[in-house]
Image 1 (tube, one colour):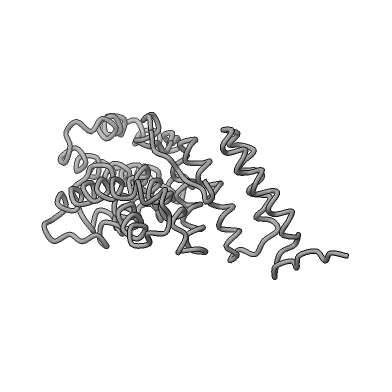
Image 2 (cartoon, helix red, strand yellow; image 1 turned 90 degrees about the horizontal axis):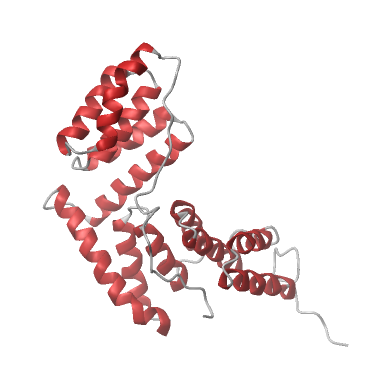
Length: 269
């Protein structure tokens, strides 16, 4: 009588069942059935400890499905969780580097691609990594020079993460915390209008209209053509007169309507 394979520690089901789910999720992803690929992968997560590398593999599939649907922030966060579990997985790092690019995290994108290039573990990724690395380096260096001559990659990563954190907190209507995140982003390098514009929204939501006006004017000083700040500034008198009403707020991605030809990878392709 053949014995069943020993169930790994902490798993709630056997390896064979998990392998079946992984195979199904990968097939669903390949067939562009992204909703079911995410659903199947999330089912896998219910059966495994959070520090298990197979847990990270399932997160990787979810992250790719989000990215292909242009849900880039969800992709980045999911892949970041996977990388924390399995930091030596070149597929996860490569895919997070791509998602970082499409969430305006050029510093983290460069850092991930640099790490993948040092690994040299996979022939398929090796074919692409140099082109991706050169592009990421070009963008990150340009961003650093815009801030100051001695601006570092660490500072760029921190600043861009602070800005995205502010966006996330704004989406959760945590306006004071979002304000702090945008102010930190500005403090690290005051050269872009968007942090000031988003700070202005946080201040309007807290009925701090004079400060919001200053923030919008500062955004327009950096970029006089910044349409959103100009529109919000023109609407400010209305919100002063109607403090019980609040403007609508929606997070948008500059890459939402961009056609992407990037390829995300899963292990075994």
